[in-house]
Image (cartoon, one colour):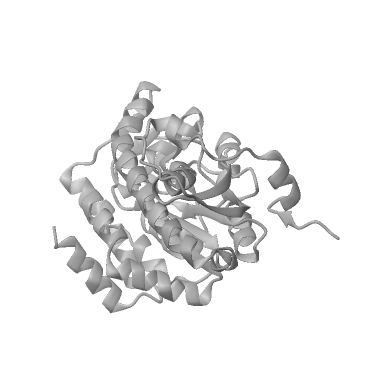
Length: 350
């Protein structure tokens, strides 16, 4: 029988043989011990997770902690085999692999998933998520749950609880400081395939260039692009500061790490495991989000220590960045007024 391939030529049998069980999450960040009962159910099939985050990143921890919580709190034994840092393929090939069932779980920024179905497009509108508190309300809102249900009808996945992906993105480049959009004119910025992200960079005067995340360092090093719009933790952990110099706190996009499981994998779980699995996934995401919030300023500090220049615009300069971002709202397609109204209500419900 032919082997099923995952991403760039990795087969599922090799994945199952070569990966270690994912029990290291608690040791990485010192999570508290949980009370365990004597009886435990077992889910025998190993679950393979191909993640784009590095080990120890909050989005990695949010998946890595699920087995610990299941075992110690819900009496369920499950093995999740973690492959971090896009080792099973590019951003899109890992998403494709989950949809076809070659791997079971993946995560990536929300913008990558809108190429498959547009239900979550509104979360990537510039300046729609005002701050961390609003983001955390949104993750547990009826709006998020309802959007997830719509998405699942069109895409063969189970949407898992989301986590932040390092807070707000900085606009980075290796050419010059960017106090306002006029200074970005002519610069080439790596982007995802999201139409919203591409339009945003264009509105700021830059030239968007879609490139897979795993190819970004080389693209910066070789001058294919001059910068990108990425949050501090990813810039630092993937050593992008080695090929960048300047950043601006434009505060336009709060990065959401979208996490999904293959729909058939989830349906194959017995009902008495499905519910504990989702509860454990939510608890793990809560822990990861708390850690992620702490790390946003921490990694800005680490980048400054690495001699990176991070610029905070004046009120007048910030208004120009915001104006460019708001133009995206006028051209965005497939975004309902009801979703925008619901997000506005969340912003004002603090």
